[in-house]
Length: 423
Ligand code: AMP
Ligand code: GLY
Image 1 (cartoon, rainbow, N blue to C red):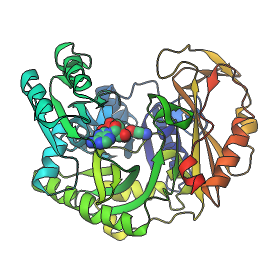
Image 2: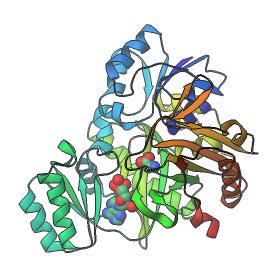
Image 3: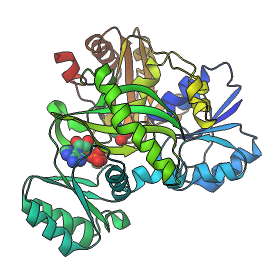
Image 4: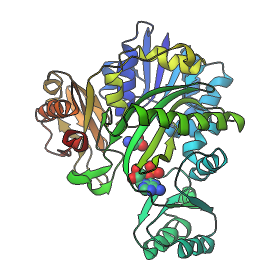
């Protein structure tokens, strides 16, 4: 098969790396890719959100299967446009991607199909939103309805913070159109975990759980990021809890989406709060987590291309993924300053040496090759990923590799996996 992966992050490097191992993958492209993806695929200089150009490329190159990594092109209808040309793809239609693209729609689906989640209300009018906050008190969570690059959630400890969050979104238009509607929610208590399932419209295939670290600095301090590290399995999600997540959350969602006329195809990423009364949904994403995908692909023993293709072809009831028993963990190396402003173009050395540590693969996120040099060109730049019998050993291996990387302008957290290591 000729396969095209869409995206340019560590997630897409991990997907391309896994797909390239399949005996059925004859030619692999990635648009636009990055400095590391170039080792496993031919990079094509088309931005992930330039969906018309991607469709044109797929037609011209007679691509058999397109794997769409990020939410942007999904929400823009890349899967629909490919389907219209008779090209198979992995990832939901624009309609189904609204499960991530609109928090309000996702919450309404939960309410209609009895899926456990935080109590909520939706508003498109500022005074009514503030009135709701006055009536419910704090702590409370204010969310921009649309996509806001992971920044549209404000956890408010008191009512004044919540009013300010409303002003921020609805009056100052800090998130543009994404914030013209808001969801206000009850703040749930518990430990967070993520769960991933493949969905082919009708059947759901459980993958595994993971945990990530969203805060920029050690001890879960500092500003929120896209994720500074992740590991799988997540000890908090034992088999019994994972079975509840499938039965109480994922399966009713799939039935509900089919009933609403937007059947879901792709990976469903459930952000969960494990509360005293059981697992509750925080949010859905319509794609793999980044960086969760990196340790997930490392632990996957089965042919990744076959699983993704079975998802697109509606055959998930006939396949069963195999996993390594080992744990896998990834440490994100980011440019100094991230998630605020950072400089681009600094040189990174030692990546090949790091990759020689037993059980380690270094996935690239924001890198670019410049002759013999490897340059940092993004916020999150490298994902040093290790597999080992336990999370604690994977943590040790990953940091052994991190220490071989010579990049003075980069930083990473030193405590990725602390919850699991401490258990
Ligand atoms: P989201 O983008 O919806 O995943 O939210 C980002 C983060 O905000 C989550 O990972 C949680 O840490 C937190 N969060 C969002 N909604 C809630 C909620 N209702 N209760 C507690 N924490 C929440
Ligand atoms: N790691 C969080 C995300 O992919 O949304």
